[in-house]
Image (cartoon, rainbow, N blue to C red; front, side, top):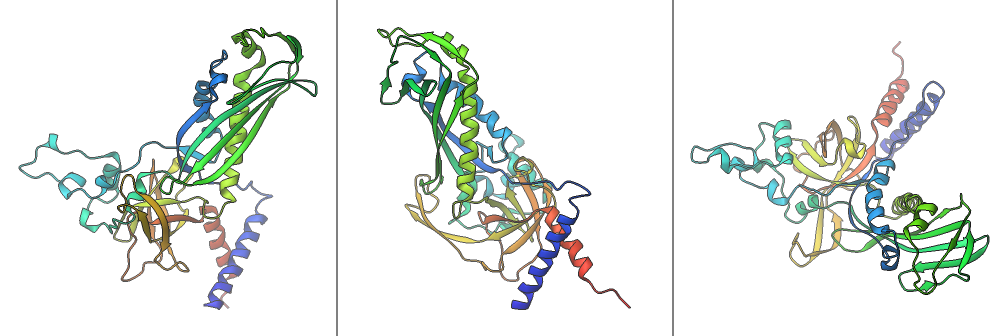
Length: 375
């Protein structure tokens, strides 16, 4: 076993050298997979929204665009349901019986695609685990964010600020403002444990103007002209960008919060995983698969149940390795490279990244280079 590990390590080192040696001839693509998320809430403190510029609406509109700009998250709001995956064959695979009219059959897009990939498969071929199959129905993270405060400065001097609990009034009725600061906080939640798994505070500044303003201290109101001149949509966008980047980095540095997804079909040494080209998955990418058991507060996989723990029950040191054949839309088809007799991949099994296709190709080249030349 040790010699096998050593041999693999040497080959991986050679592959790394091989990849670095090609950098001069062609650029190496830096890849990262996006995580499936669902945005639960983006809002601002009530005073900000009532002061002439609706920060909450602007932030909601801008956030989806920021997610597309960044290579961290994919906003997915529709997921396969457990019921879809265990329907009788006449429903699941659109096999019509004489007594069943065409209008009685409903096939989800997920099922239709699986049927296309595996036309001979039957629903009883599914390796089904009630304990974990529901995990296909939610994203990796729920995301919530809030704009906490807005502050204005003249030089180094603080002039005024708004947040959810306090309105700090301007020192003078008229002042020259040359900088604004926005404070935001974002949180990522595990959708099954309901625990916060990542939390960041971010700030954004706007400094590229110098404008004078008069404020009616009796009314304490800042009109729309203030927001138009100071570019609040711009500073909001900058704050969202900073927040997404910080949250993604925080999650990547947190144990157990690296990229993962779930198996949504398993049969005949082939699997389908949740996520496709929209996450950055490519044909040839390889993934590790782990069967798990879970403990629940409440009924296993119940709609309101809380996940209290997960344990890998397949071989953690020698997981299944699968290679992507087709990176489709919202799902990908793969085949198992190391088939294990007497065991199978469960529906809902955990999927982790093993190697990108570029690494697979480099490793194959290194292995070819390492082979002795025949005499």
